[in-house]
Length: 120
Image (cartoon, rainbow, N blue to C red):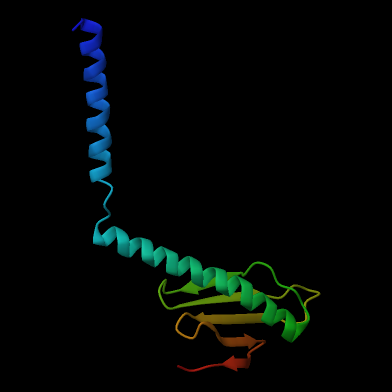
């Protein structure tokens, strides 16, 4: 066997060993899985709130809202978004809370008037 063939076999061997090491080390730890699940839950809640809350506020006030001025969440069970009305808006403040356990909006408050208040 020539030196070139030996070198090629050695390079191929290094690549194979590298692929095996990478394949074996890809398993996620339980902590990584929990963190990923928490992030997915938070993203799902945010998306649901961003879809439902602006529509409800527009239905109740006739004013379309886009970006909340404040957002509060515990990152696992609820997200609350608050909007401040502009000069030409039909409301001064609006607050919308979405609970994941209810699968939708649990509380809607517009100008200190509670319009939706669902309990567990």
